[in-house]
Image 1 (cartoon, rainbow, N blue to C red):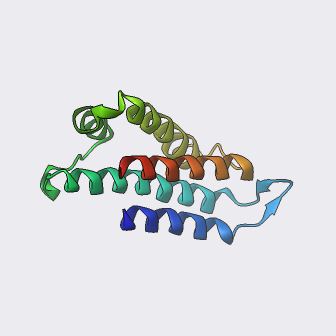
Image 2 (tube, rainbow, N blue to C red):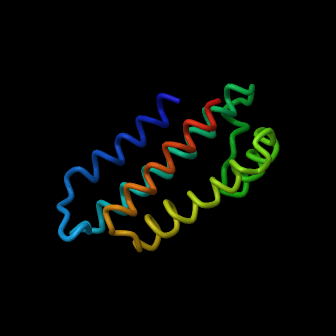
Image 3 (cartoon, rainbow, N blue to C red):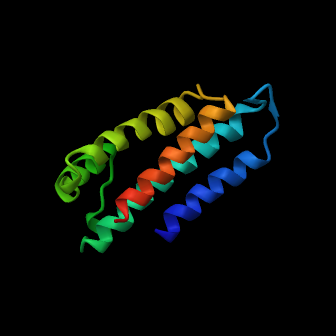
Length: 125
């Protein structure tokens, strides 16, 4: 999980250079970049876990639907909880944070990154 945590750390470093006023980031462009990097951390964690389970690099998912199917197939022991967590992270990090740039509140950003880290910790078990 070293690589996924490195991605997450990079996302936090991007945010560390963005000024905050009234608990909101002043410039959303780097915030969006940080959200994209945090989402990649989640995907990297899944990839790392799948490789540990014996999949080759060519067999790794290539789409969000592929990641959904992989979570259902290889992580069913969690009774779908990981898939629900992934869906929330996809909606928050990728769609709202990166793609649409809707999240600029520092508290919400911090909570989203915390959820990403918790997901990474869960999936490595």
